[in-house]
Length: 112
Image 1 (cartoon, helix red, strand yellow):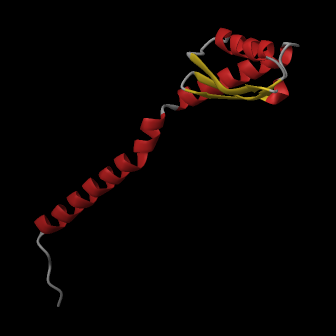
Image 2 (tube, rainbow, N blue to C red):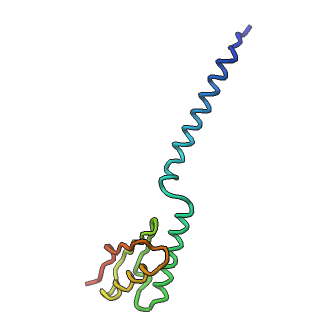
Image 3 (cartoon, helix red, strand yellow):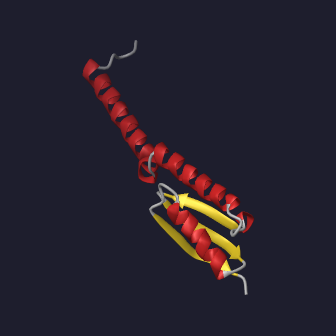
């Protein structure tokens, strides 16, 4: 015949199981909280699209030669451009785009 465990002992184990699951959920979702909300990611994608579209519409900028990435409103421009004028125009376009907090163009290089 099997021994029955006291009800308190079963409740104690169930309680710890619930606590352990709660901790796992919190730890598992921590990177999502630190990375920002879904809205931030969508906003960044929208900013990137606006900047790239503006590059395509501007004949002074070669949109295919410039890579655009946005992270929390900071736009990073990367690539090779034909002149300092083109580089400055690309930076200006990015700065004038709504939602842009800062433009990083240190990796936007003029061909020599």
